[in-house]
Image (tube, rainbow, N blue to C red):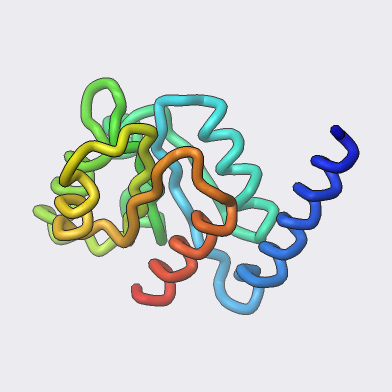
Length: 146
């Protein structure tokens, strides 16, 4: 079973590398903001495997205090985090006229949250667990629309 899962996972990653490889353009910097370390590590590994530059932050406040605010080409934000959540960070970016594409991720699908997030400027809202292909497609679309 583990061998089958390993082959299947490798096949998905290989497909994603071919379909969403960013090597033909400047390497995009994707910033991951999620309080769950295992999620940050998994997303960073996936994005690096398709050629993206990636950095990660354990909180919205940590991201805002960093020097990455002007460098990130796309943000992947968790909706629910201690302190400031992803939707509040998105609001702050919009209010300060920062044009950084945002993908929101969440384990909690609250009624109306997706519509509010999309109308508030998010490029996509993904419900955990989401597929690697769904995330890569959302990021690809956000970068192209930029």
